[in-house]
Length: 267
Ligand SMILES: Nc1ncnc2c1ncn2[C@@H]1O[C@H](COP(=O)(O)OP(=O)(O)O)[C@@H](O)[C@H]1O
Ligand SMILES: [Mg+2]
Image 1 (cartoon, rainbow, N blue to C red):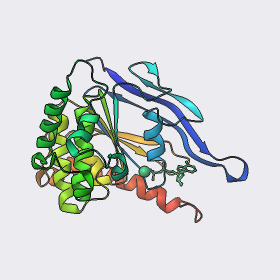
Image 2 (image 1 turned 60 degrees about the horizontal axis):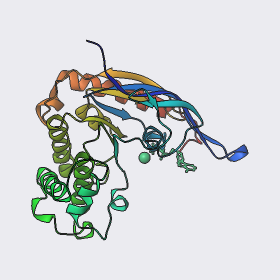
Image 3 (image 1 turned 135 degrees about the vertical axis):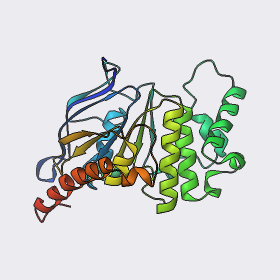
Image 4 (image 1 turned 180 degrees about the vertical axis):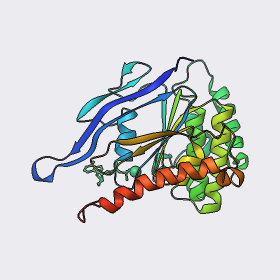
């Protein structure tokens, strides 16, 4: 079967600052994402995951290398790419209620009336379990609920590619497991192509069809592994599956090995 490549990153480098203050974060990152895939990109904190995600989303330039979306070079945020930001509380508009925050994600969808967008926003809030909170404002919700609004907005945009930057990093363990399953269910239901960046090895493996493992800075792709656990996952049985454990071992070893060899000055 020919792979339908949606996103491709080729040799991405990024250096912040100049001279003695220069910090090379990305050291030449290359990987591709196929339509319908859920890809996790995992690496330690500070290795440049947000930098990479912003580059892919066309929100911030790179020093060298190319990003292509549907074969076209990305130089500005392309139509068809949505982002759920790590800092979700700052990505929701405090003056809009939750329904309007979700509807905002549909701003670039043509041919939908305001009423249809409202209905669709309500449907997405239902899907993330916030049916009764549409008329409330983000600041009236807990952190985890706000993140669900942000996820609903990302999905509502019906983008070809959804980029998620550590979307569950700030929620407690139980909520986190529930939200992983919710996100996976929705990704399957909407046939959503997703790239999730995270520092959490177990989450990376649990969620993904394929895991891209990063090194420490200057960051490159160490290796990739295909997770052959099928689309449907289960918090208990998947996490006990020998294939899950083998993948987890592989990724953990790679990431811990790098940490052990990191110079004392590394963050
Ligand atoms: N705008 C910036 N200017 C200078 N340094 C930055 C900037 N953004 C990020 N960094 C630095 O680049 C490194 C990688 O940051 P980031 O991409 O946020 O990593 P991650 O998301 O993996 O934690 C960090 O050391 C961070 O301090
Ligand atoms: Mg980050």
